[in-house]
Length: 311
Image (tube, rainbow, N blue to C red; front, side, top):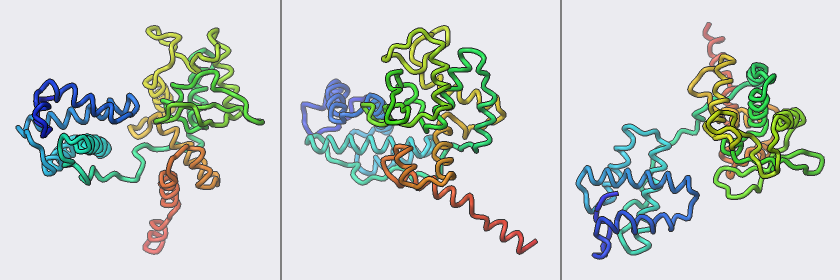
């Protein structure tokens, strides 16, 4: 952070106060998760850096807009959107606190496409990948369980990372896994575990001695972190490894593709939009509708009809 004058109050114009007290007050105001605070901190620091490079000491609305346009040159739309949201929140707070006018009010971020940035897999492709996972050793059994759980439950890598053994419970006639979802502070939601996936998870747990309820559902097997909770990076890495091993090498295929696959296969299987929304834990049904819209387009064979008429 720099010593830019972002306040009308004389006592807040020193670099030390701007760097620490002012910004710390903003973070306290956010009352957000550590991950969100980390992201917004990065965004505000980038904004300060931009102002410093342009020698702007009293930023205006036009400066925020120019900052946005500068971001567009080398950042993805989603990143631009996040950064502008952070800047808007920052000046919303400075205005509320009587420190600086809200110059970022109604400044738009970047236009985001409704198309998914990651591809999904067909059911036959999923079967091919699962067959490629060698379950004759400890790592193979663990990896198979993780892959099968993610693709049937639509789980994110962070949800697999956070899962504990005690989260695997019985509800009615079902085995379920309570999960701490994205942006959630507690395990308030659950997914149903199919018999095939439960057997895979139990087989993985049978390889371990540390099976107390509070232990991670999946652990690292690497030399540096053996026995500790498996990281999101490791989860993403192993999923990508099996994609490539089965011949599916693409930048658009990542661990998140398994979540896209789960939602897409649910819709293709005839599940109602509301059911899939609940399954995927989408806060808004419009998110689920994007999947349905993309599938509708995939079934639209206008091109074939035109070609038949012409040729």
